[in-house]
Image 1 (cartoon, rainbow, N blue to C red):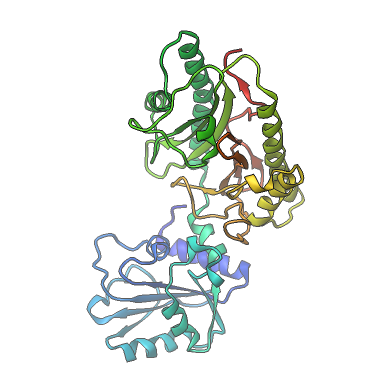
Image 2: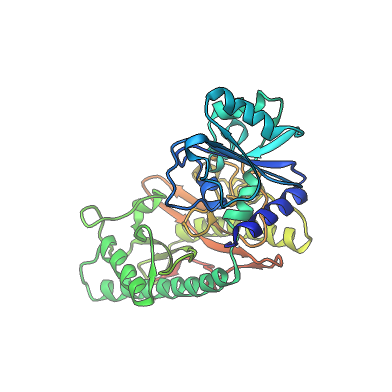
Length: 400
């Protein structure tokens, strides 16, 4: 969310007070902490070859510690400034910055549990702890300033989600037309058709959409290329995964996955596995809806648990080999809470103004994989929105 510098500091202090955190300590060296660069709105023209630290207390005046030859780099930020030159004066300056505090939040995650926000090196954390100050994770804080959408972003996302939903139907129609006319068609052809629809609608993607048939769909990150692809024929199982955003600054992604069968009637084995995946998806969505309806705090790992428990109870747990969902923002994988208790235990809270996918999958090696992906947007008022309706309720019989 865009704010001027003074508004940003005020918002950070209000957030610190609400989260009951004494202070947020930003550390950066040669752009190593992208969150410090963005949240503090560092001017892009600055030469940054030396370490700087910036402390924002929950109440009171910020403090900044900058090197002598780059002592003006934080002049756009309010606060008391201290200049260091030697490593000894850096450590003395750090003691000055942290005086009166018992703990600070930094871009650190205990045991690297959430690597997405763990950008401060271990040595710097040791240095801060050496002053007697405890280091807390800023994981929840970061998403307030990195993952929340404003009204314009939410509106554009709803439009993009509508485009993707239309493209799903058009893509299955493209496959139907090609198969019934006996026109040689490949996964790459289907991918290029989807990209052509993106261009018509003025939406863009950082990587091409995916079409996977049969055993290829059992690889969650399979992507066809011009050189490597499989044909799409009658009787094939088809998975399409597409993600895009509007072609303008600050736009945010929508991301969905659908499955179909290139025939008139879907075989029982596909229908059975889809029902399991759908049940896991709906269990996760219902948990989110219930939590926000009752104003109950909910974390990413709990949403993953809901989907995973359902799928495990149906006997397919070993084939659900990735997290349930990821944060969505200006990048397809955003910096908010992920729906994850597999690859990481994501204890970040799901907060209003953010978006994430729910996309459980069951992948049967050398056979097929089924994933059903929807996006969830939490409005600033706490309403749980699923854009791009309707969501998938059964495997689509493409030739019907």
